[in-house]
Each structure stands twice: as structure tokens, then as C-alpha cells.
Length: 247
Image (tube, rainbow, N blue to C red; front, side):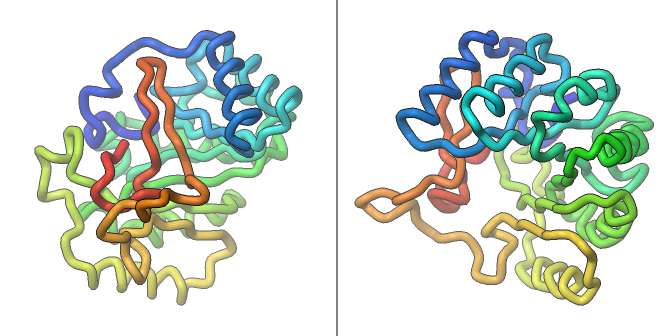
């Protein structure tokens, strides 16, 4: 399954095409040389099922000098992770909550599998993080999840606001509609004094996301561009505001 649940992201993740090793290498080289790209995050589908993952990671790190991060569901990745560990700056597991909450969206046993992957990465010396899309059903589990992750030495938790696109558009009950709910979450995280960094979408931040896209003269820097094998280039919502397509 995809580290970004198909339940939230819809038809786009049903495509089975993927970059070839040459396409990936050429794209990474172009983005670094022409646009000053400094880091790459390999998403999916599930990156660890790509047969050329080791070559892509090696090219990005050793030949281009990029910071390399992988976002994964953590299922059966141990063999490949061992191969790429020397070239990986961060392994990020995608989770939807604690225990049965996560497994209800993913599959039975996926929560323990993800924690096992984080433990394995830690033992290999690979820095680890986690990502979570906050919904009305799991917002109360952010702090318990954070405590579980802290015991595994996770360094960073990235929290995303669920946007009503893809399959999420058909499940408005999952949206967190009260700004005060995010305020309480921020207060809980601040008072918990957990030993890791929390990164939040602008929607979850105290100031909220901008109501309009970037100024007319364009952004000086773009936080993130997502590329898929079908040719789409998508600017991060964080870079351009609420009215940009999410991905």
C-alpha cells in the first residue's frame, strides 16, 4: 500500500507506472543543475518495491550530493534498507494513528510492521521520522503516537492537514473543521516536551495557511515540487497557499 493512503488520495495512486532508473537519474540531475535542488524525497506507491531503488538512492547521494529521504509504509523493507542505509539521510514511516486506528486504514499488522522498520533503521544508524495525516478520528492519538515513536529514537514527526481532495472529498466526516482543535493539539505537543521535532502544515500552524497563492512576482523559493511518472509537476500547497491542488 502507499505511504499516503489511497483512502485519502484517490485515483492518482492507482497507476502502476514508475520512473525508470535512467528517467529518475536524469530528472534528479536536471533539478539539481538547473534549479538548485538540494534534497529528494522518494515517495510512491511504495518506494521499496521499486527494483532500482538502490541505484536511484546511490546516484542521488553519491553522484549528486543530494539529501535523500524515503517515505515508506515500513512493510518488509529490511533487506533493501540494509543496502541503502549508508546513503540515506532519513527514513520516514507513514502512520495513521496508534494500533487499530492505523490498521483500519492500512491493513492488519501494519502498525507493528512500521514500528519494526523504525527500530531496524535505528539499529542500522539511519535517522528516522514519521508522518501522519491528522483527521477527526486520529487527532487524539497524535500525542500517544509521539510517545511511542520517542521510545524508538524517532527524531521528527510531520503532521499534515487532511484536505478534501481525492477519496477524502467523499469523507467530510474525517476533516478537522474546528481551528480550536488544532490549537489544543499544538498546546499538548508543546507541553509534552517530547525529544523530537514537530513539523506541521501551515493549516495546522497558529497563523494558518495563506488565503491566496504566492505573490504575483512568484515565490523566491519553492518548498517542494512533486513529480510523477505521468509527467505531472505539482507545487507544494505550503508553497502556494490553500487554493493550490493538494497531492
